[in-house]
Amino acid sequence: MVVPTGGPGPIVMGWSALRARGPVLVATLGCAAVLAACSSPAPPSARTDTVTTTDVTAGVSASGSLSAVSSENLGFGTGGKLTSVRVHVGDRVRAGEVLATIDDTAAGQVLAQAKANLRAQEAALDRIRTSPAVSGAQDVADQAGSIVRATKAQVAATAEADAAAIGRAKAQLSTDRDAEDQAKSALAAVKAACDAAARSDAESAASALAQQAQRQLQAGDSAGAAQTLAQLSGQLGGSPAGNAAACSQVITAQAAVTAAKQRVEGDKTALVTAQQKGNVDAAGGKLAIANAEQAEVGARNGVASSTADRPHSLDQQQALADAAQATVTAAEKSVRDTVLRAPSDGTVEVINGAKGEYVTPSTGTTAQAPGSSAGIPGAAAANSPTGATRPGGTQFMVLANVHRLQLVLPFEQSDAAQLAVDQPVEVQVDAAPDAQLKGHVVSVAPSSTAMSGAISYYASVALDDTDDRLRDGQTARGTVLTVERDHVLSVANSAVHREGGTTTVVLVAADGSRQTAPFEAGVVGDDRTEVVSGLNEGQHVVVPTGAS
Image (cartoon, rainbow, N blue to C red; front, side):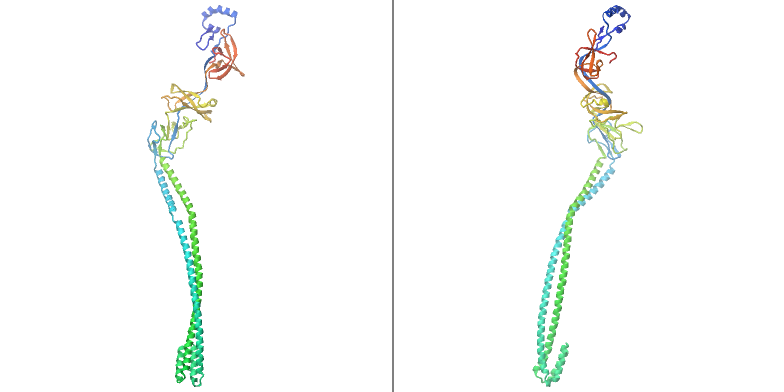
């Protein structure tokens, strides 16, 4: 008997099903059943399904949590005492808004020291830039050159003067020697005249006096000779005037010769002195020139040294100034870092600190969900000494965009192998069970995460729509549709038999007879299999008893 079931196909009811309706019905139909059994065997009871056109889908599911699409951990670069906390959890803030501050006394002192050092280094740099060392050294070198030239000119002039003095001394010596010769000639003539007078007998006594006077003159005693000659003149009395005059001229001639000799000797001494002075001046001139030239060489070396050192000194001092500027920049940043500002618009999710408390430098990091800047839900939580979970872990403050949420799901490795970007996702949120949300896969983590001993891969799902009841951290379940074929001929998975490479179903004819029919299967969904060929729409297939 065929009884409608309200499903996609009829159900064949067998004898055991009829008997279940009660003894009266069994008795009433007993003879008909016997007669039917005599003519043909009754088919066994079976459930059927209809080959029909429908959507074939398959997916993998996982439970996870909603998370803000962007989340930023905020804190201070250095530890310190909180001097203000200007926001509260749940506040909506704008980029650049001051969120909190810490004591900046130490940072301010470091900045002041850095600025003082910078000023000192810049002053040293300016001193090198404006230093007259090079120009001064050049002036010294030029002056040294002038001194060399002046010294050489002076030495040349001295040598010329010495040569002139020597020439004059030589000329004077020559003149005085000629005068000496003439004086000697005159003396000889006078002596001859005097000697002739002395030889006269009448004047023998006078001759003796004359000879005495001569000896006195030879001895250089001019005064004595003059006295003797006076005596001689008294004795001669009536001697011829010419002879007396001749003898008196001997003294004058002798004095002239003596004077001439003295002048010659003086001229010789003057010549030697002039020559010695010339030699001394020449030697002193050479030394003065050598000293002046040495001073010029030193001055020129000073110019070269100053010129060569200047660019290196400038580079070295510039490097010191640059280093000081870098220190100032770092110190300024440290001062700025005592003020915590919102890096972007968002909502304050976590604050772990109050005014007057001390915070440590922010060192924590966040495990991010794949393909986004959102953290994996729960990854930043930490336990406080009381055992309670501390939101944000070690972070002082967490800022998130809670108006845009995504779903982060951990999939076991076999399910994760079927995931791909842009696959559609059906989302059910525990806090809003009536909300039917759609989404799509944004990214799948390339590496695994060990969770309770099992290997999982995180996937991020962007929500295509939203609901006012959604909150960051709510639990939700997502089903990623890994297979989706629309409006294809399909049959129930439970009716399909596979053996080797052959796929078959058991068809039920209108008279209740059955036959095995092979067909070409396509995509296998969660509950239905695509029929590529071999079956027709409307055919009924046997579903094994107990199959869902």
